[in-house]
Image 1 (cartoon, rainbow, N blue to C red):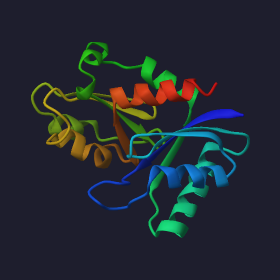
Image 2: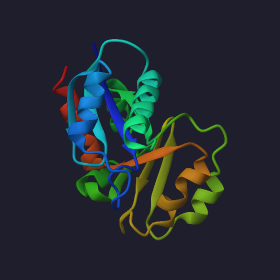
Image 3: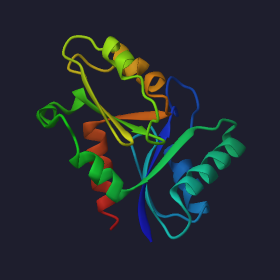
Length: 180
């Protein structure tokens, strides 16, 4: 069995697309996943799965949520090894000391033609970004809430993205490593 990390985008935000984590865990178990663990209410899951591909699992989960709940969230599935490599490649190691300012945007695919000039124009103050493979790293010292860079990144990159802060990603990694 392989350990996977499942990230759902846009659930349980502002009273919309509600999906209790207990129900999500049950859905995944019904899809054949084992050792399912969730972290906070924003759609972070670690699990063990015996067969199929990551994209196959993402598709099955999306369809099942849509069937049961009436909405189809964006689902991204990656391996523990991919998550660990993403953490190790952090281009802003000093930002780790203030983990709420460091964010990782997990991408569906490697962008073919990202608009890096547009990303530069969206930057404000001391904001920094780095695009590497399937991750968009953001250091936002003034916070993510009002950042034009964070708000416009997905459109400029051209690939669906789900954002998590450094602390959350590290906790997810620790949960996943505990399943090994």
